[in-house]
Length: 55
Image 1 (cartoon, one colour):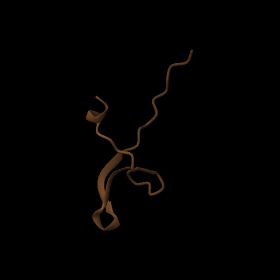
Image 2 (cartoon, one colour):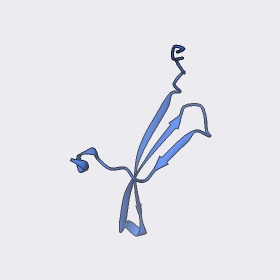
Image 3 (cartoon, rainbow, N blue to C red):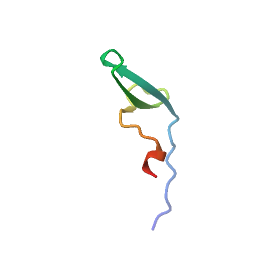
Image 4 (cartoon, rainbow, N blue to C red):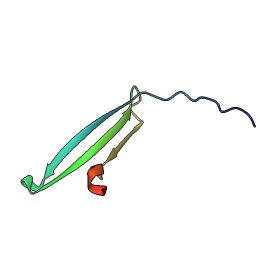
């Protein structure tokens, strides 16, 4: 078996957002994760939940 090769991990940034719509009647949270220096590598999710909610 060959030894595992180390793959460089890109630098990532993240931002959290609180988004309000319908003139303030609906609010949800979103999380954006982006690779630094690459405008085409990003992920945004609107299903952010606190870990405490799962306990």
